[in-house]
Length: 235
Image (tube, rainbow, N blue to C red):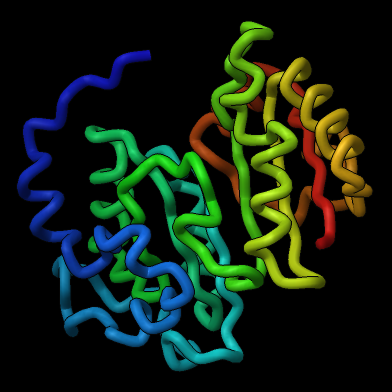
């Protein structure tokens, strides 16, 4: 679906500039250094939220987590705010979409968040082996035509790339309202030897509901009565 343009895009980019990670592939293996650069005090004009009790940004003790396809950023921003000792990367290539993540980051001064404004086609180009502690894939494009299966973010070749860039003991977590995509994902995980550690076809009624953080799409579909599929594998 085509996204409508943002009239205030230049302003959002200016205010959110401290949270941008435009270097992209140049940061491979150096993402903690990017966080260690910090964010200027009062950047974006927001209150300093999500930083109380935070670890030093870029410290090796902090977990480093990536969401691929962050949309407008509700999930990744809320997660970063709730876990100030960890570091989070929001990856979203939509020209008129990722500025919304910057807007949220600037408004709440989420200093443990960076926004990668690109689409990831080959994850190994952006992250070194074992650099991440976990990857979130939330409500990814289902690419419903069979001939487009290789474009799905949970296609087996992509899963193998994620496995390389996540440290042993880290995770890949996936949730979707699309039953076809979920079945496809389970099959691809099995094909590459990934065994689910968590698996449910009704996340909001599961034992993991209390810790679940909503995305924009998830809130919408849940209100319509659609159950949410969820799977997590440990690397």
